[in-house]
Amino acid sequence: MGRRPVKVLLLMVVLAFAAAGIAWLTLFEVHGPSSGKVLVDVPRGASTRRIGQLLADAGVLRSRWQFIAVRLLRPRTRLQAGEYAFSKADTPWHIFDRLTTGDVYYYELLVPEGANLFDIGASLERLGLMKKEDFLETARNPAVVKELLAGLAPEAPSLEGFLFPATYRLTRSTPADKLARDMIGQFRKVYTSLGGQTPVLQTVTLASLVEKESAVPAERPVVASVYANRVARNMKLDCDPTAIYAALLENRWRGTIYRSDLDSTNPYNTYKVPGLPPGPIANPGRQALEAALHPATTSYLFFVAKADGSGGHNFSEDLAHHQTAVAQYRRGHEKAVTPQPASAAPGRGRSHSRK
Image (tube, rainbow, N blue to C red):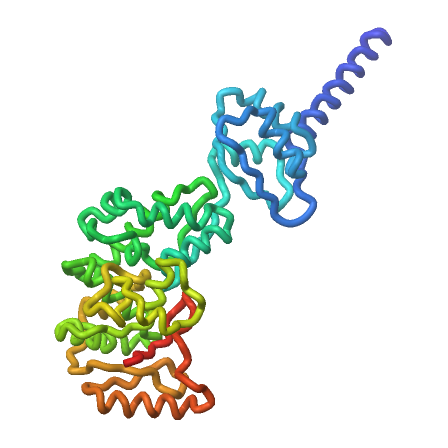
């Protein structure tokens, strides 16, 4: 073999190795963000060039051409829109794989027991997923309420009370009605497992009061019995959290219950309107729902918080004994001019009947 063919062969080998090196750098080079987690939002309908540029700008890829090269080898593969999280170095090939499988980033929305629509909307806004007002508009839309609460309580004034407390995973593109549907689906499962009874709206409304007024699980059936007994006698419930909710609905809640709040004629204010409010004031958990479904059998009509800070209550059958319990409570807080107001919403009420 002459020298010339040998040189050509060597050149071909060098070129082959160079091509392999370039291919490796293009498809299998490990690269990633310099620090922390990077989120890349891939818009629906974005071109391969656009996606590659977004990944390169975020430091996920060294160059957009790496992503384009993978696309040339996989021309028929469908890429899925969404927000993707990148926290470690990876190859262009695997990154492309993640976009084909829709391995999008999920946010966790924690809805604690006793949270109301305003709390949930605020949490969604803090996560940057949607504006609070957009969520409230959906949750109070009569058409949405009628559709999502069909078979439960389509007559409810809003979705309040039926958005079951739990942790939910959602993406940036999850719409408010889809989230609400998932939360109501969880409510249906729990309510059915408890042997849920009708009328559902009244039961859930009672459960929401129990949830806001009772921090001690063992007392919840007793608290439920107090409200059930007062409803049966057509007495006003005198429930602090309902006055707070009425103020929230009218956008006048100031963090403390004022006399004007107690005097409000809003139908949710049980200091003025006897019986249960028109709908729930919060989203009750399993124990509160169970207590509303099965209240304890008592003759109690009053309760007031114990002064020991335990979260428990003293229950009374008549006003005289209740006034004695209130005096005990006040002596335990003698430094205060008046009993402390209910805690600012959102959150659990102070478990204190003012009557």
